[in-house]
Image 1 (cartoon, rainbow, N blue to C red):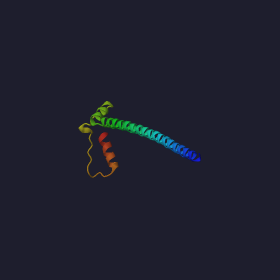
Image 2: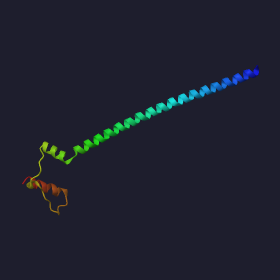
Image 3: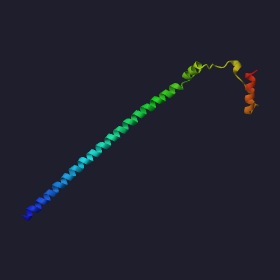
Image 4: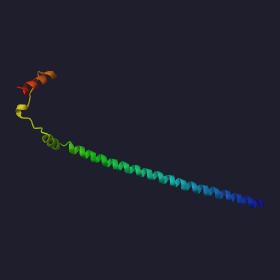
Length: 109
């Protein structure tokens, strides 16, 4: 009888170990699935952000296009300078003050 009891105890222990192993595998699978879900969520956010960046780059390029800038400048009242509005400086005026003075004299002549 003791041999049968020992055998049953060994079988019961083996069954418990097998059950614990199966529970561990199920838990590991659940953790792995959760991590994969998190990775997929982050990848989706990265892709959406990448699309937003592309949209913003296109918007910046379209707003800084020379044709658009000229249209905006004309819209706010800016005009191209006439030949009389251009100030030429001689090469012997090295200081900024001389430039400002020459510009003032030419504008207020």
